[in-house]
Structures are given as structure tokens and as C-alpha cells.
Image (cartoon, rainbow, N blue to C red; front, side, top):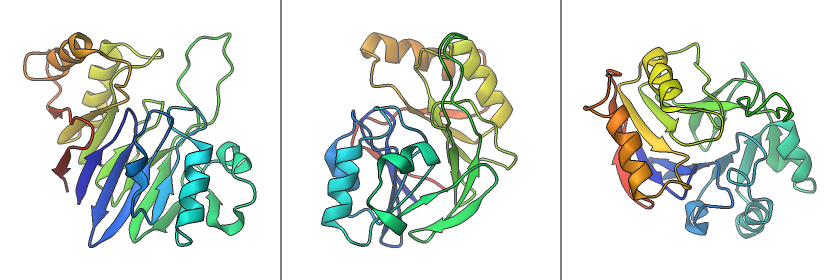
Length: 213
């Protein structure tokens, strides 16, 4: 499986000529959806979900299908059966990839800020995208997409999360608001110079790829 990082929280995975994009949001380059057969959306925040971008992609590609939670699906009304609502514990096939759903809620930002729905996706029993939550799937994870910068977490939370999930590799996502200094600081804690997580830590620049699985 080939993994390509796009802006902020979006990745695209490819296998056997099939393409699946996860969380193409408002900070994502439009080419993330080029040739995509399916899209997964974890939740409704703008940096993970760009309604007009998805609608244009669906218009340009009649084969495109979207799996997401009910909140996002409501905003994609008019696309009919091309949008499928899924939730915790469900399994489905998207563009030939086997996907299971884990988690229910967005991480807590502050008690006075209402929580929204958030689901994570485990793809082909290998790659896990948690969206905006530190969800621990009830299944082994080989490669974890790690949201390294958010108003709802600290580096300490991330270290503990990686230790609990125990993947072989962790790839940084959700880093669009970090400058070079912040990126280096986070990498220092999560990489070989940090307190230790057992997982190999990687950060792809936008458009860069890696072979996983």
C-alpha cells in the first residue's frame, strides 16, 4: 500500500490501481482527490471536510463514493446513495479496501465547548486514521496516523497514545499549524531522542509518499 500525505490531516492510499482519500479538508491540496475512487471523512471540522471540494469531485467522477458520519452526510444532501453513513463497530469495503470504524466522539477541547461526532478508520487492518481523537482501536495497528498538533492534546498525550496503540510506525498528520520550529520540537519528543514509544516516527512533507503494510 502506498501512502501519500497531503495538507494537514489528509492522506491518500493506493493499492492495485485503486485510490482512497481520507479527510480532504480546507487545508488540503485539491490533487488529493485526483483519481480517487472513494473518500472517508472522520468529522465535520473544516480542516477535515471541505463540502464544495467533495461535491466538485463527485460531479467530476461519477464512480466516487463517500463514507462518513451522519453530521457530514447531512451536509452532502443531494448525493443520494453515493454517501454512506457509518459508525462505531461497522465494517465495509471502499474502493477495494477493507475498512472498520472505531470511536464515536471528537476529543474534548474544553468542557464549555460542545463535542461533535468523530469516527476513526482502520484500513486493510494496517493503517489507522483517528481523526480528531486519540482513539485506541480494539485491533492491532501497524501504521498509525498521529495527529501531532491540536488544541485538545499535549506531547505527553501523544507519547502515551502511541505507547497504548503500539504501532510499528507512526506518521505525523494534523500538523498544518506548526512552523519548522514546532515540527522539530514535536519530532524530538516522538522520535529517537524522546522518552521512547517503540514506534518509528516519521513525518512526510505534503505530496511525499511511503510504502506501508
